[in-house]
Length: 296
Image (cartoon, rainbow, N blue to C red; front, side, top):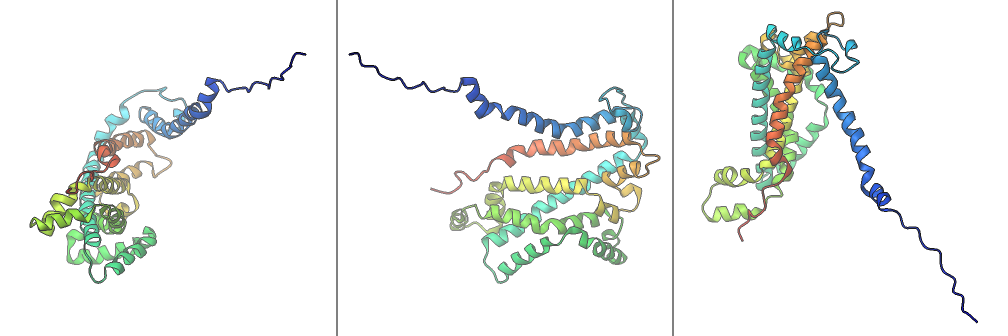
């Protein structure tokens, strides 16, 4: 008798293309949808800035009418004055936020003093209140302060910078505080053994190691001040002191005479400084600089 062996049915193995689609391939259409969703408003604004009609209704077909008249018309307005004002306010706010936040975070991270825990708790509680609660108090405070020190009153860029610095100090301190805690205390102790002062440790050792968080805080502070409208509208009154957000709003505030083409052209140019700063700080944002910093 011949022995008959039953063969089990062969398993169907997925093809190479099926495995690739299940593991990697599906990510490409998802990424395409996300990129389209994020890029379409930018492309639409760029198309509107190149349209000579000055409205958004005629820009349904992108780049159907290409003209640089809107960009040329910016020179007939106070746009470039607003650009300078915005760069001054944003740059000073970013530098001040980095310096004040770093000093506060270093003190809370490295020193043990009476009221340290209470100070951190107070900063946390203050950040719980929305910024809109302080609008009226900021206006009244600057109005009264301007009677004594005109440079810190209403319609002053210095006053607006101070308001930005005070509003962001708590959040920046907490953001830097966590990063400062990741720096080993061995660095401070070894520097003290070598005779370094607290100022030398802070400026020459700690600050270079926390460059990534300084870049993040500076970038966030600059973007926040650059695009703020409400506080700038409250503090700055005269047209020569306006920032871009306040000045460009006047072009579209009236629905009957809104010039969206001019607004779009100004928005495209206004995005360039933020883009340049982001690209220049990208290498600091991505990685940390603490590797190999502890003496072995």
